[in-house]
Length: 115
Length: 111
Image (tube, rainbow over all chains, first blue to last red; front, side):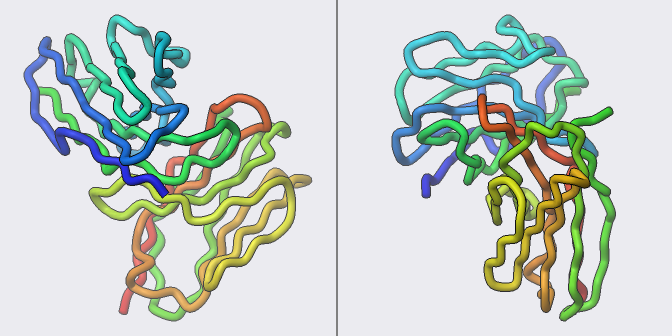
């Protein structure tokens, strides 16, 4: 199975700033997904990152707030823009080689605290 | 109503006990049912998944799906301290890539 790494593992940021999170997979994947995990809440899908096209965002998430890049089949970035304390969360990425199969592994996550 | 409901616990059991973790759901279109294990400071890892109804066994772990009741379970036999983690259920329909997760149940197995 694929190994997924994320950078940074954690960060403390000031309100109004932006943070870019990197996700690297050790093998090519068709789809990459970005999730948010807030304390006491279920994992929430932010967007699906597609290589060669714009990301697909879920309800409640917009490109201006969470711009995503997917330059190739092993790498993606998620930017959390103009941060507020409500953005404090763990951000997770995952990938899968074909649709409708369970997502097997997630990255270790990026723990973000916004002051 | 949430798509998936899961008791957050925490659940604390002695080593060797049988653990039962459960989720209920509301969407009858769900066909894939997954259980993930998440250790502290780590991302979730797929533990087991079943398609449609029935049981699936893998070592000390058994996953059960009751579609008529919209209820899934994960049983852990002879629980070990290394099983201490948060367990998340997740579900998906046949189409699309949307996975719906429970909030997770925190389990501690006491030596």
